[in-house]
Image: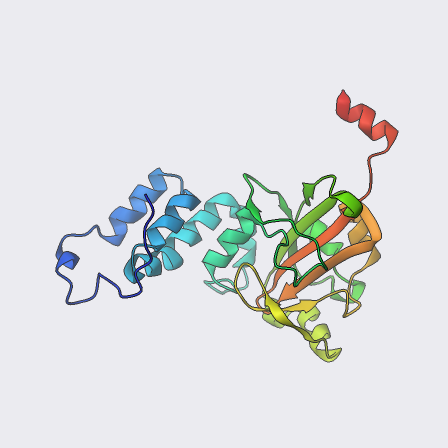
Length: 248
């Protein structure tokens, strides 16, 4: 069933159904039983502003804590009870490969975004995307989502990530100190914040391409004002020995 977004909340104080609709506690129990299904969470948020508020405050948070519990504990360990860019944005980042279909990022590559079943995010991998002077920052980065045989572009990989406490990070301070310019039109696909181009800021270390298994001169990524990261790379071809091990 397709639900139409209602911009005027039907659960206002004067609404008669406030005496009969499910309480937050009941909805919480229902979605816990559904294992915090992200499609159903997104559907519920479209009913009205009352449900949308509940989804943003509670359900996306529980989804994130269930999908990546250790990562969420770490992201909140600085004492904050929230995360940069809100829980809905983080939930989307966990399960959505942004691709590139708008033509504003990553030159003219046209690969639509899509949901992914499961992605591994690694704090250790994140160190490879930071310059040596910024490696006290905490960055979680996903394995690349592979899109093979993209014509002249070869095998393309998209990756994404999130900083812990980005507002006080050394990466953010360095971007500001270097006078890095925000992209004039493009915004983060997860939280709609403006983006910094790390390649233009000369803040892409060689270790990033090694970690991704990509060509050194074919990697580019952006970081938004809330600390979400999205990037693209051209993957190196498998060697004959690797191909043989894969076939086994």
